[in-house]
Image: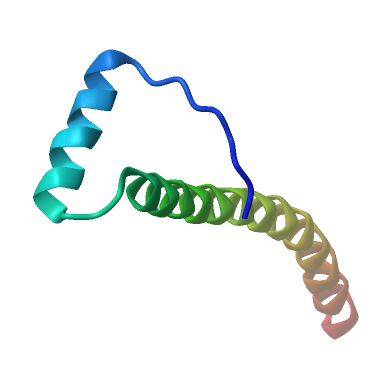
Length: 74
């Protein structure tokens, strides 16, 4: 496990304190879970972007192949 220093705006810090007290979890556990969820969101966004790029490339190739098949059929 790694240790990091974290600076939070006062408002965010007080919200974290309030929520962790209500949930009866440690601040460390709460922030670790929040970062984990945030990482999952960004991994999905990155994957979506990658798939969109690859789909666009594949689409161009697919249209070329389809046109070639149509020429051969005619």
